[in-house]
Image 1 (cartoon, helix red, strand yellow):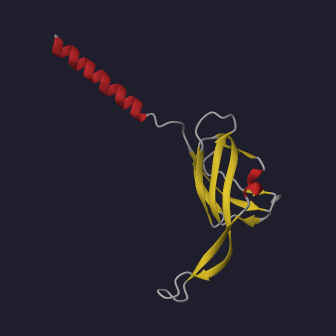
Image 2 (cartoon, one colour):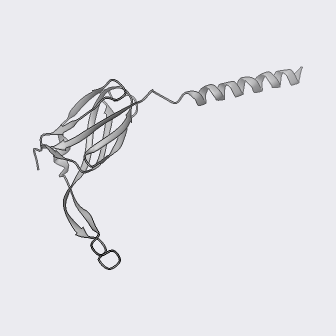
Image 3 (cartoon, one colour):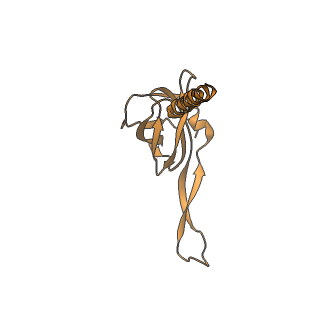
Length: 137
């Protein structure tokens, strides 16, 4: 009798672990887009999508060459960005790699990104282009 009890208890425990393990949180959708400040691409940086109601996870992605691809939970979001722009080039290691140039970056002033931008994420494949006015440059 004890063996059957422990067998049933073990099966129930295993089932509950499997059920909990299968819950991976809210469904996310893949979105793409660009980020600009006064019509100038943000060459590199990060973008974060915070829930406008403060409930649920924040999602984010890297900005590369002014563009991003992110996995985001649907809903109304507040966008936050940190970014840099290419301001020139320099020869990174003239002795080891003469003539190989690297980009020189300059951060956008943080006050440029203080403008509150809200977007609504609705579906997979949505394009979200973020445009800051550039005030405070």
